[in-house]
Length: 445
Ligand SMILES: [Zn+2]
Image (cartoon, rainbow, N blue to C red; front, side, top):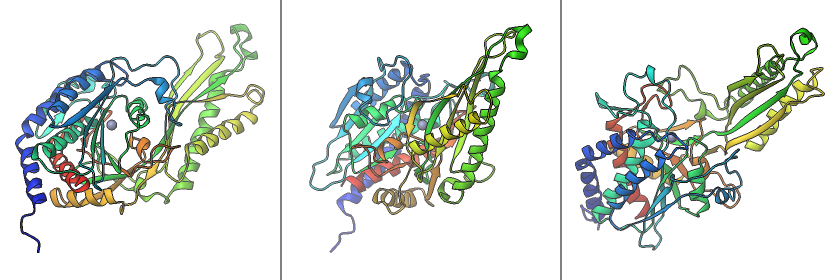
């Protein structure tokens, strides 16, 4: 016979009540974190981690692992970010908190969030101080509010509520507060190489309180170096201008992007779904961005060199290696057809993060557990995919001996991440914290 009030239900009620009672404290923490300009690859990431550590220390029985990653360690990961120039993690530690379960068949769970943000420039275009954490009409404004300091506090408060409630967990809860997501995911790669594994992962990125992210694109960054023939003014007609050559390469890349979009259309419906939040039409399973173009160094010299930098995104039906080859081939074809470039071929370099795409099935157990709680605590759960990449790319896809962890994204939404007037909705922060706590209990008990 089932009793009307099981101990788990009582624990769950205590957990949700704890979260409700701490709402203003949690909001103040988001403000405190947003006020630190923790732009990726700066020591301000470490300033955020100091506060996060104080918060983790409030969680009963949590064991804390704090370390500054070593670049040599990171290179054990087969698809580690390619760093050109010097790189280190001095003053930018990772923090992992482990709430150890009692064992006995319980499933473990990784909750992951990043402390870094992107530049708020151009700041003069903002209507709010990007480092102010100002609250207006239920929205908390500032760079990093939505992406993803709010989500970071949700996972911390969810775990704290569970630990305070005395709920008995069999599986471990592993909280990862990582550096450098925006700059290629070195923090999460370091945690993966340190052998943190679990039966499931939740990246607390801003999907929105009623959406679970189950698909994400992969990405590669490229740099194409193009060489012309510099000449001084009176011999300019004997020169070969690298700017003109670069424009041929640029056109070839745009053609390839359009071809790829055509070929992949309809194969990844989740990545093409129309979503709220600024999209004016359907999404696209692949996108190439040409973000940087540099050329020449003197007005009176025919430009002897040019560089194009960009990113290509791709869905889970492709591998990053294949996409790289496709771009190299397109550049080669345009070079062979050009009288100068056929003998002076452009160089294609790959750098930065190398994230693979992934997609998990809606019937994966962690998705079902999370969905059940979203449906009951928020309502109308929807599945969501996005062709941008996140740190889930280091947990979900199997790369060598790493990964293969069923991983989803779930965190409080808002709008305008990476642009002007970013904000997070405070009611979503509250919802997400409750859902995460309930999910920890269901999954790890
Ligand atoms: Zn993020």
